[in-house]
Amino acid sequence: MKRASSDHWLARYLLIGIVFAFVFFFLIFPVCVVVIEALRGGLALYWSALTAPHSLSAIRLTLLVAVAVVPLNTAFGICAAWAVTHFKFRGKALLVSLIEIPLWVSPVIGGLIFALLFGQQGFFGPWLDAHGIQIMFAYPAIVLATAFVTFPFVARGLIPLMQSQGSAEEEAALTLGANGWQLFWRVTFPKIKWGILYGMILCNARAMGEFGAVSVVAGSVDDRITMPLQIEQYFLNFGLREAFALASLLLLLSAVTLAVKIALEWRRLAPNIVRPH
Amino acid sequence: MHTVIDPSRPFLPPPSVRRRRKHILPGFHLTLGCTIFYLTAIVLLPLGALLAKTVTPTEDYPTVFKVVGHVFAVAADERALDSYRLSFGLSFAAALLNGIFGFIAAWALIRYRFPGRKVIDALVDLPFAMPTSVAGLALTQVFSTNGGYIGQLLYEWFGWKIAYTPWGILIALTFIGFPFVVRTLQPVLTGLAVEVEEAAACLGANRWQTFRRVIFPALSPALLTGVMLAFGRGVGEYGSIVFISSMIPYATEITPQLIIIKLEEFDYVGAAGLGLAMLVMSFAIVGTVNLVQHFTAKRRGVA
Image (tube, rainbow over all chains, first blue to last red; front, side, top):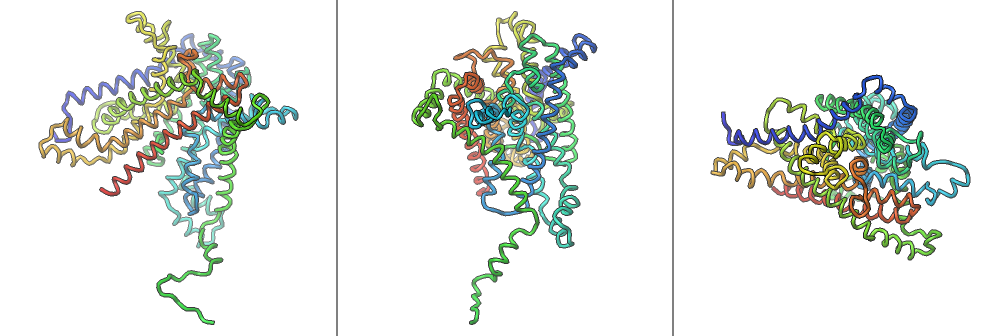
């Protein structure tokens, strides 16, 4: 039956065609290119590109950064969500907007601010130099810059989730004599565990793939750079096969991230990632 | 002494008891304390350092006036102005493109049923999940003039160069911003009552009039929000552009790149000045988004 709200068939096919063309050229085609270029020389060459010393050290550093950043930001996200959703206090709206700052600040600024603190001409630079403590161009600065950029992901996912659940069940547990710890682990945690996982997955994807912030604080010192930066180094030094091999690993990571995201959304366990402020 | 009970006031327990009752659940001080501490350490203090750097005298600029003067000299320099023009102009153009294609995509995904719809809906988030360096590398390989999958054909057939020109940056920024418009429009489109369109049709409007007069006005705040979000994201983008742009000063150099160059030249004050300029502009974009949402909510509340 033709309804008043349905479009002319020509318009419909035209619009669907545009969507397919756009998605194919902008999304599917580049993904295929990464896979084709990575596997172009066969599996043996792909493997040797992945196990080249620079690739291995980049993979190792990327994993180490994620291992530090994701738990930190998860713990913070749970704390922030608990404080914001279960209590009323002055300045709550301000706190929520402050948490969102890293989302709209350029990642390069995320690196710049730590360079201004710990770099050679930064506020603590001379003091750190005198005491032989290396923060810039090393692991600590990379972790800090990555933590800044991925800071809001867990909190932003959990706050609307916990808001929609309210505090009635927690209050009931309290009247039954539960202490704070039992309250969290037995009542709240089971309700929000998928939301936490969702936030961690997003945080992890961004942490492993962050380029701008890390490139400021890591420079281009070989063996001290993460996978995205190593991809750039390979690219600049005509190591296209190695660049695409590392890129294919990160692509796999984003595929897993998308798969988990879709699985959680289909079960209506988590909100959408890209939401307006 | 006896207490006079004022019936116009509700009975309240003494202040000491009230304060304790304010938070029923435990953990208020612990969680808020941790949150504020971590927020200060990771976000507020470092951002404060950025502001402080633009007014703190150094060896090269011994007085506050000289520091501020240098900040303005760098942030309003011809090279910086060119980079703002490029960053903001191309981000705006990419956001407009995303406004058009994002609108079409959201409309098709919500209103039509066709094979592959769910796959496309899932793929919309790809630019969000994909590291920017992977996107930049892939797009460069697609659009490079020598050996690029599409770029070489475009160059041979039409003489067009995409990679290493502003067009390449535009394509990268369009890729990066695509999910924002689609994902802000989708929920609003879902919530749009079909009956309103049917009423418009009953009143004699043709489909185009209905779209222009009924559907588009209802969607325009969400569309504007999505476009502004894509715009804001594009202004700060760096990772993908490193690959697809040649970063020639005054021509294809974006502002984030200029910040990095200033840092490499050990001009920390200048870098902080450029960072401050970008912060102020990002503030303006976020402010606009919030204003749009505020007025939309207000209008909905009245209607």
